[in-house]
Length: 480
Image 1 (cartoon, helix red, strand yellow):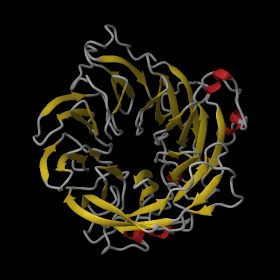
Image 2 (cartoon, rainbow, N blue to C red):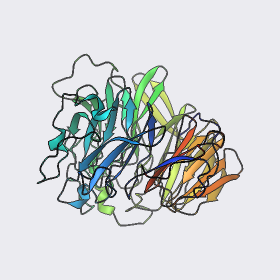
Image 3 (tube, rainbow, N blue to C red):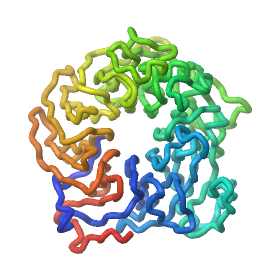
Image 4 (tube, rainbow, N blue to C red):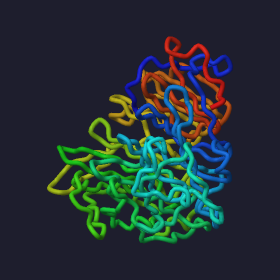
């Protein structure tokens, strides 16, 4: 949540186009965060504004746009699972932020699939080993359509509903972590439509997948499934401690798990997945209910279960994580927690260093600098905390709820709200607001800074924004 981009403006004039380089039309619901890599911008959205008229209906869409001007290069538009709407929520689109490495894009689809895509789309042909995109992109009962230049090139895909056998809820939403030849991902297992039952309690929560073939190499064996409150939300993070690599996962049961990273180079893929070895854990809410936690859904009392929504952050030699009640079904308490890590033999010891109470639930990943930790909560408050001691520095009330995460760059902290307002504050111990811009619709994701620009996705549009000296004199009108 911290970027090394400078010379960014604090506010923008969307009516005159001041600081707006281009904007590109998305669907009508966008919960994803823009990712910039290799001259392209990737963003997940829905299909309520079809970019390819041949592929209509409700779909999860990942768009690949040209970074310079926002032109659509290609898209993957996967139809809904069908049947129970809680498996793949109507209109939610594709929510997972993609991970890009070289000429490959890795992303979780709305259907509980891990996709490996060619960054060039079909421009360089339909590369293998998977070549059945036409049938794969067809909705149930729909005749496959011939592939066109706007279609994605799927190199391989892994159905997590079959391996490791999850039961998805609403949509997949986590990001993929790359470590050498391996992809680590949260499988996004969740409750069923009653919100009080786990259909697949034995499914793995964390898996390692061979990035060249899409085969599962290893799975966790912590049986987090029976302790899921609503869904397994948090994405995995990589921690390097004293020269050794570890994978950290914030569990749906409010436990921070530390797994020993596998060797980054894979010589051969085992016939059966091996076990990921858990070498440390810390329960951030140990006195509350664990087994059967989802049976408490809908009860808001303080004694209810906790979960971890955001990704744990490794900074300043410690972990930072948010924990608390589920945003939609649980108690309204949450905390920002700092955790110390140490090694002893082959194990990792975790200890709580400090805890800072937030006002409501928290979906965000904290942004942590050398001195400060910034985190918003669902009450619409932005908190600045001393990263060393946990002492509060300031709290600002924003104009609406926040579901995305803050971004720190250029001495500013940016954060967007459901009211469609992007705030910019000075990074420091005093609450100095530098800018406030109202966009046309809600901001659910996180702003992204790259190559001298700030990218902000609202529900309906993706904006590329620059400082005055760099901005185009005639910004795009949004016809992309």
